Image (cartoon, each protein chain N blue to C red):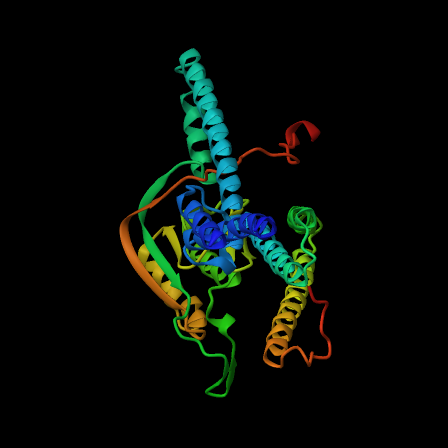
Length: 250
Length: 127
């Protein structure tokens, strides 16, 4: 009898631990919404997202701090030299608008580009098609923006990212990077300018809309009397460039 | 009887524990489970072979689980899936132990039926 317990007690202990861990594990799998295979991937993505959001928060805090500093300086300035600097401040305002540092609104158009809904791979009507063709690409967005600029757009934004002098539009994997922010389809381009000119510039035969239409990309153009375009919110410091003092050189 | 109670206690405890496991920890527990399974089969075999030793059994349980988890951890750090090594080794051992158990039990059964006159060829040791 005692020999039997010598076996059974330790075995009972191990079996208990075993059943406990197995049940625990199964419970954990259930808690993870039954997505075991991708749960670890979700985990890493979550931590990445969290760190990115933390970074973004701290940066935007810093940004607003700096902005309030600028505001302070400006108030001090206007308090000191109220009369003499009226002209200068008007100039500054115009320069900021030109640089995309202020919110602007006006008549214009809103263009939306959506990925083609059904693109088959293989040969369709004698053309070799690939699924990638139906996706809105960076160069197509660039073509749209360039066309809008050429037809007199005064302010542009892509998915609420203001297009400035230093904005890039670049393929970033499955997304498009604008002002170092990743944007995904559907892409919404806002442009302020003469709505007629802007729209006809896009709709011209063989123009931008026709060209992306070949790939099945859906484009909708909406006119609006009050297109609002937000300011550029990224960093505005220059690291390498400084104003050249031309007048003194000559 | 004791074993059934033990299983029930384990299940109940697992259901009562409020913490869930995240994806990162799961692989460690999984490897631990396999190590524990191996211990159970090994212990049963030793018992049937009459060689059961409580110290070997318990130390094997902890040491094997710890080693498996350690291997998995190192593998994670190195970017090599070393948990596979633990899974494969313990998997093979579980099958070996199980086949030994099968042999012993079949042997006994045969012996009983034939009045102890015949034994199968690869008979492990008897009590």
